[in-house]
Length: 80
Image (cartoon, rainbow, N blue to C red; front, top):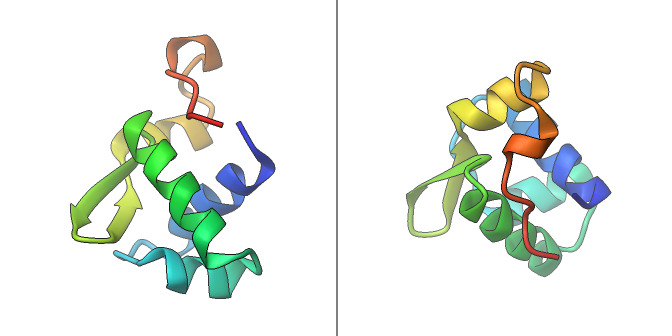
């Protein structure tokens, strides 16, 4: 997992909203295109949920992961 992945998930933990990569990037100070790629990878791994075209939110799996309730070995590694 890339360091930005944690930043993205923590953003959603602190702000339980639906957001675009542009909004997330502006709030965590990363490049929008990079955040978009990471959101897609996190969604493919089940840590984020796609709720509309270009909109993401933290999934239940992502929430459990942040709370330490999941073994890291049980997750599919997000694409690099």
